Image 1 (cartoon, rainbow, N blue to C red):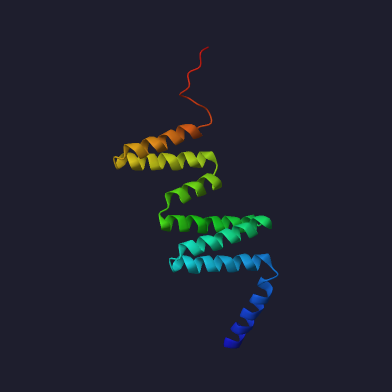
Image 2: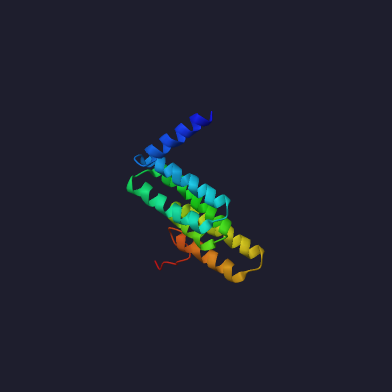
Length: 137
């Protein structure tokens, strides 16, 4: 069994240099390992490299998988700016509206008026039509 594993590892290393899919899976494994060890900065660097590789080769399913990794890292770091950027880049404005509504309600329930205002204002900016603008007819 050990010999089989050694042979498979050797073959994987040989093909990973020439096959982009193998390389991306290897990057994803590295990201998972770094994430589990709490090394978020290194995970983000590896994630950035792998996203560039996936974009260059138009591997959109891999990009989707990497977006999930990116979200998990941002969530674990509790970096609200990275989460916001991820949502704005990944989802259409209709989903962003729901995101900002939820955060607005959250901050309202916690008594944070400034944050509540910020998120509710963003919802109004994202609405495709402006119901609050009165037209003179």
